[in-house]
Image (cartoon, rainbow, N blue to C red; front, side, top):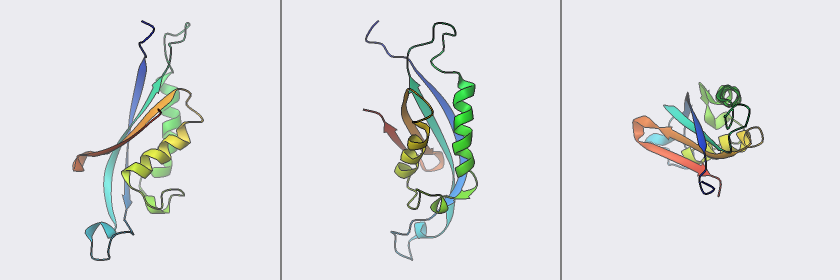
Length: 124
């Protein structure tokens, strides 16, 4: 069993608008538009002896709520660090903010389900 690893994941959602300034003015994505985003935060670790949990989901949710508050119903281009809010940039932004507060963080995935698109940032 030593080669097995336990992972837990917590999903979240947010709605936000953005635009891409690197596209030409006549490109539809240069105009303001919005998406319903979904995300997944994944942690890995050994279950604690007293609880059997890698991490309490309530604690994970509390940290995600802080991030969600900074993104939900916002213009992402105006969020510091998301001036170019691609899926890749959003995933990295979320990972960078959760990494110091969620020990065992191994991945963040951000999706635009209506477009069938996703970006994942994963620790080595």
